[in-house]
Length: 403
Image 1 (cartoon, helix red, strand yellow):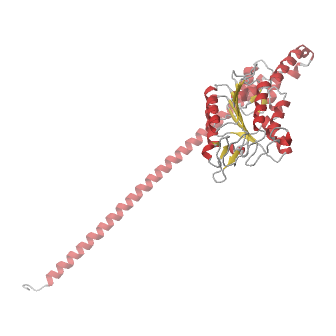
Image 2: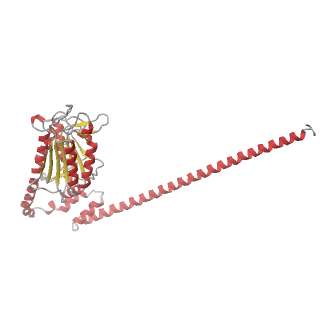
Image 3: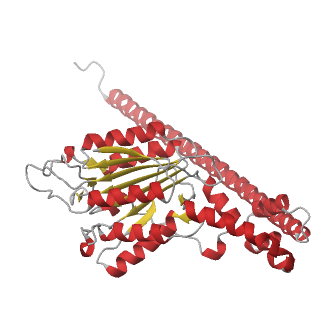
């Protein structure tokens, strides 16, 4: 029911010494006493194929493979993954099986094989999955969730944009590899998904997911590119619309989960070695690293880009231009900071003036109240004196000795 697999030659997270780990779940044989959740045809085969390609082609160091998993099995596997994950690890979670969306609460669920009808206490809630992913993400560098189930898009509502190929260079890969990522690829939005695509033994989503992983020959295959490629193939060839994005509130910081194909990395290293002697006959300007780097940053508004350039290429002919642009950016930053400080000072003074006016308003109101009280008191005294004078006159008019 549970297997632990590992590659004989594991790879590491790019630019970091971290392992690749995976939790792969496939549920076919549902045992629902209410017969609400029928058995599936391909979920276990999907999970086995995903686990195999991760181990064989992508060098995952440890893969937990669960077939026909109960709720307890799934939660325990998440807990184990959270316990074993290390700082720079890349962690992938794949699920194939039934999914469910509560129309009233809009809450989504994974359905384990021991689920009972519509009793959601026997399901795995999306909220539970998010919490578990958050715990794993607190320790690992990159986390990718791939969910091949109905309503799996309920796990996210925020999209993620990719970067064009011409913007990707060594510095880009290094930058996003070091930033934390918590990404999701889901088979469908809030819709039903298919099982056993064209009798191929896989769901359409996993069929095209595997195809993309098999066809990849890039040095680094980003989760965003995998998501876009898989989504495009699935939506063109089926009625499904996969979704991808990031899990909000789980610490995503603009990083990327990378797949490193072992053969592609080896092939690239061989090619570089063969081509090195030939570089002498090529015009240096065609391959100058500083020029290539400069093209990436020349219109940047981020001073860190120019600082990095000067650190990497201090002797470059473009270094003076980089210093000039850096100086301009810093001057602008100082100007902006000064303007912000001036604005903050104005806001502070306005607040102080508002408080002063409010205090003056309260003081005037208090003075008015006291004036009105004094006026009222004077009126009462005048009325009292008038009454006393009237009584005195009345007493004087009365005959002496009247009994």
